[in-house]
Image 1 (cartoon, rainbow, N blue to C red):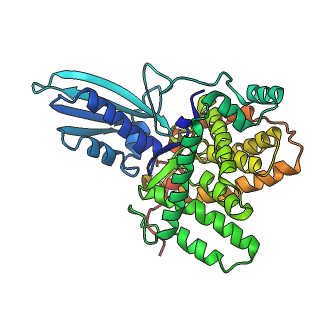
Image 2 (image 1 turned 90 degrees about the vertical axis):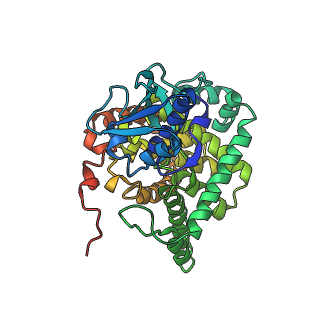
Image 3 (image 1 turned 180 degrees about the vertical axis):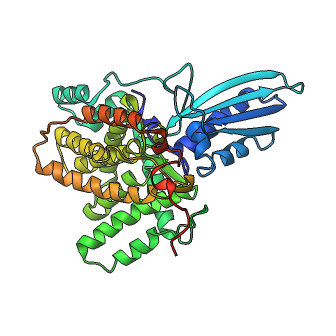
Length: 401
């Protein structure tokens, strides 16, 4: 597995696969071919189908703003390696092809091509949770200690930056009101949820706080604000909301939160390695489902759960999202994405309680549900995998009168 740095990508929304990834690929190709006279960028499959709603064209235009370029759209053409494909071509003044490159945005801001499967080198020797559990048990270690064993102490400064950005995205989201960008004219809700919650009794107050945190980050993401993909932009509101909730309610110290981030990153890494976190490949179960698994694991660790209870909590986080489609209305990361983040955060808190009530034993392992999620996602028709052609995306984007 790669470093958990590849799970936590800091950047601007609304989509890690449709904005972060293509921007990175465009910058790489332009740098390599800075002397070219003309460029052509072709978007395929899901990138073309929902690219305008996800601002793919905007980030490409910003990258090639000083160049002669054109963007071509091929929403019905899916390349074999991944549904999120884009092809770059560079030409000289005589229109002779100088260079050509096909890249794939595989989720979480990561880019691969026809000759690679990962962006960075692998640093973990174990391939699945079963192997990691055995290692932790044999060595008397926690999951976060396993991460430090192979990432090194320098991972702490990175995780501290991740948490700082997460907290800032919550703060920024809670301070803003108005309407989100795009044709849906969707009102922001985070601020009103938070303010209304102050008038409730403790149980409802806490739940409204949890919802408001998740909404705050998701709305920041939808408006192109700075967030942490955890593991993607579409699921970026779940983990920070749960961590902020535990910090607020249980007075959790920063050191414990950073350790929880390490553990959460490990579980997200396993899904990315053995399945997919791309909505275009496996639906929203790979995005919000993985985010819920990460948050569930983090919550259970924060409450003193054993490694087996933590694994159980994460397993439930993913299992209870199996089959979830990616069907954004109007191609925007707003409906149903934002609400899904809020309820996934609530589920993560419930999974934590449920797992702690048990002794950690259960029938379906985390590894098994990861494999199931992947096969389920591959079986989904393409209309339900981030193309905005099926599911909720079929309905009118206009408010009901």
